[in-house]
Length: 229
Ligand SMILES: [Zn+2]
Image (cartoon, rainbow, N blue to C red):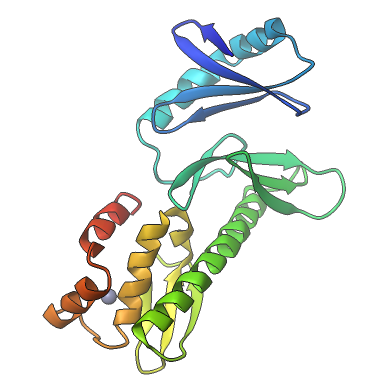
């Protein structure tokens, strides 16, 4: 179903939810409203009218290309996971422990209503770290086997200017936890890049040749990654 709201078309879908949920999605500023089954179309329309200003503001921001995540960790923001935009949902919790979940293209943070920005940020980072750890574990395991490298150790860290680093002597790799935001094919480029530093410690011709042998389309993946920098 659709509702025409002034010059904007809003996609409406009925769901088994308790309250209406409004999202504006990148990259085109598509507006979507999820409505509980028991709520009438007239009520949904009135709700949209009341949110008109918010919709316009959000569409403007989204269409300007908000690739880098917004920084308030507030309900309705867009945050990327593995290159896909998700809507951040901050859901108040009356009892029980804070937790996170991913469902319906939403990153959900359940926390106390009075949670601070820092507490919400910590929860989202925790979700990112869990997701990225699982992805890296799979990718690193697969690549170690494929290139015949022995054991290494690795960990995540929040880094300012690099996606990863490699200490070849200690066989210790570090990956930027911000990699959780980028497409998996770009993560793979970083994984192969850092693993290749075990053999070649600079970025000279030998390194590039090794990269091309292992991951022929690495230049395209690197270009794609730049969008997220
Ligand atoms: Zn390097």
